[in-house]
Length: 152
Image (cartoon, rainbow, N blue to C red; front, side):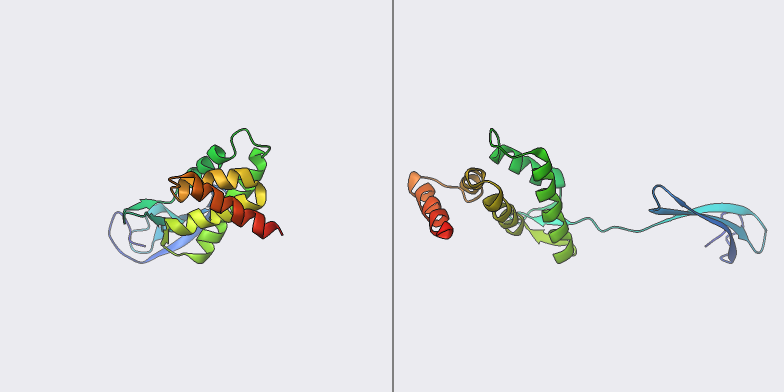
């Protein structure tokens, strides 16, 4: 670590402590040339996950958008906020585990649909109608027939 006074890059650590729920380490250092003491902070550099949208645009992944989409689909349905939070946690964990920097929006949509299919079939059809951009009743009927066939 470079000394702020003399710019020497030879220092020793005098004291180390965890700060901010142990996500940051505070270090007191002493320059071995001019003996000035100074503080440094170390934190893990996180690369934000980006979502590649249908039109090719790249935006930051926002957990709240996943939750909002499911809230709209489950409106007036017997699904608790705790259930939706748990689903959101699973989806976010899976995305972060499977993708390093970028994830296609289609993957996120598919994960949400898979979870909603198990949680509430009406919410699943609502979400699917928006996500897959249903344009007529026949597409709804096809989706319902697929759901019925999967149950048998």
